[in-house]
Image (cartoon, rainbow, N blue to C red; front, side):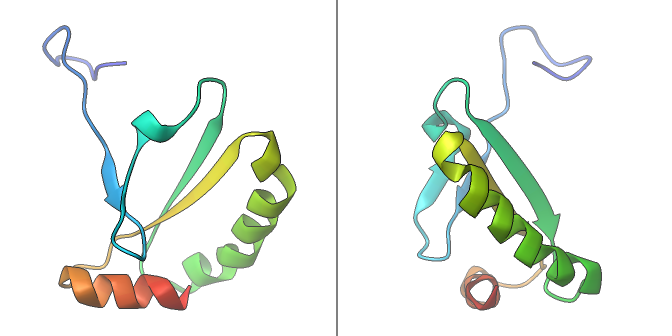
Amino acid sequence: RPAPGAPAGRTAKLELLDVLERPWTLDSVRGGDLVLLEFTTSTCLPCKQVIPAMRELQSRYGAGGLQVVAVLCDNVPLKQRTALASKY
């Protein structure tokens, strides 16, 4: 749904890169599936603590259509961010 005040008929496109630098978009989500986006940084202790729960959710409900996606928001160059994300 467009944000309030956004021009009619225009939507935002979310494109992310996985740790192998492959593109991922919401367009890849099948109708009826659910996506859990977790925005995190590599220096956030609570963010690191939630990773095992996210893995458990994906393991338990992934076959039923859940996609758990952690988005690393560190303000560093792409290669460094990819390396940090790989550690998760």
